[in-house]
Amino acid sequence: MDLLYPITPTHYLVLSAVLFGIGTAGVLSRKNLFIVLMSLELMLNAVNLSFVTFSRINGDLTGHVIVLFVVAVAAAEACVGLAIVIALYRLKESVDLDVFKSLKG
Amino acid sequence: MIEAVLFYILAAVLVGLGLVVITRTNPIASALAMVGAFGSLAALYALLSATFVAILQILVYAGGIMVLIIFVIMLLNLHLDDLKPMQAKGILVALALLGVLGIAFGPVFLMVLPQGNWSFATLPEGFGSIFSVGEKIFSDYLFPFEMLSLVLLTAVVGVLVLSKRKL
Image (cartoon, rainbow over all chains, first blue to last red; front, side):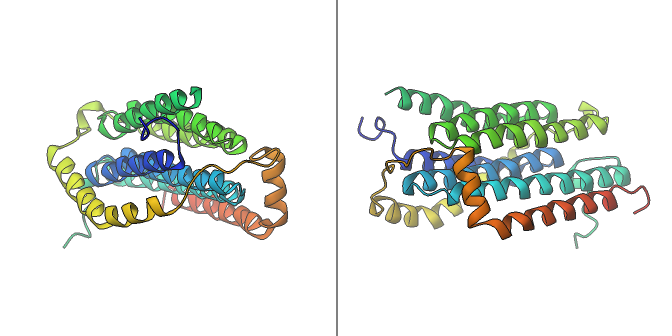
């Protein structure tokens, strides 16, 4: 019961680690470009949760500011990533990662 | 008590929807699960008294990025028959790599976690409100904040170049 009831920062950090693991598994195991992109977003969000938790531990707002930066960079990354997906789809008519292996030796 | 109940409900929703995101064949289903996951994450931020971040999460992620992703998925006119479901081999590879990572980092975490006497600090008035975060941004982090506009400008120009018909 001690492990479960008073919610400590460790609970949030473990949740963040689990979310990051789910995101990593998605990036590594899926072949669909969209789902890989979304898994990346999931990983970024797990890191944000850690930042906010540490911010809450110290009572310092720096973590919140960094989350703002991460969200802005994630938005830029999503835009560029989706533009690349569209360019790739025009090229090969597919969003499957197995199709794009012309650089594979 | 109410905080613990809320935390466990939100954490279960978040992990469940995260698993839905990475297991669906149809990217639209993944994207919709992702919107739900972001909503529950925003509620978790609110539990950590990060009001500004919670609003940001809803506005930018659920409202901006996910709409963009869903828009592009629908734009591409994919057929469900062409999409591959999750493969057992992929899951095995992912689990193996996660296991290696866990073995590598697990002991470090177990060493660090009990040492930090981590508990939630008593918060100053207005912690995490838009006012206090704004004050922090425009005093200590003014230059990085202005650089952010440059990052976004670069992204806009990059997207315009990438989406030209003749690359």
